[in-house]
Amino acid sequence: MLIEANNLFEAWIKLNEQFMMLSPEHGMHIPSRDYTRIVSPVRLHVCCGFGFDGSEDLHLLPPFYANYENRIKLLSKRYIQSDLWEEGIGRLQARQSRFQLKNPLSFVLQFHRRATTERKVPAGGGCLTQLTFIWINGRWSLHVTLRASEITAALMGDLVFVEYITRRVCEEVRMKNWDSNELEIVWDIALASQMKAIIPLFLLYTGGDENVWRQMFKDPDTLNEWHGSVVQHFWDVVIYPERITWHQRRRWSTKLLAASGLDWNIARDLWVKEYNREDI
Image (cartoon, rainbow, N blue to C red; front, top):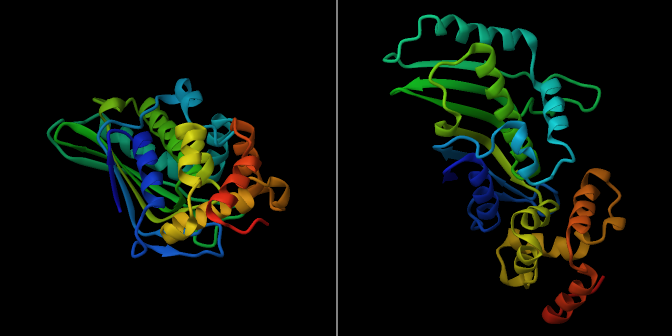
């Protein structure tokens, strides 16, 4: 699956919108799991950087996390290992002193997901694996590699973290000819998944209540398997956070209801009546 856009923020929106509308032959559908829709591989390709510029713009991003600065600190603890960081920075610094505009170059900055007190390492290993800085044809580009990613909230957190890392690298190395607004980025995800519990919040943050209504007030039987599953889950579970025992799942419903201006209980009564759905 290839998503092309002007910047990574726009690519993130397009990816989440298109994921829900994919035909059944793309990826896997697992109704019993929160990570219901899984696709491999996914590539984001953009020409003009991240679409936001450091801490000054973090308040403009969808508030999946209460504080993106805290998310950066959390991911730094998870992924930045001092010897790997110093090794990568050392390569860049050594080459900067004899940097030639005509020579193509590439440098890798590797990450290692180690166990922390807040969470164990996933069975498959760390999700963010490496960044590769590439100089060719008089321009820097960046190649980001992820083993796996939930593409809505987690991926937005990774976008913020990687933007922070690239700024940190540029400051420590004093990168020559670096232009973050003209940065080509290729972002590869080996295994991408979308969670049905988070999609309504994505719709709200990117298009308001009208967007949620437009996508959720439908008959699941007329939709593709994934979209129908999302709609049914929304009306049966998402709007009732008191029914959700797992905190990590319940927080998305709580955020949705806190940010929305609609009474979704009344809306559900209309949905049940319109499509003759069973009222649970």
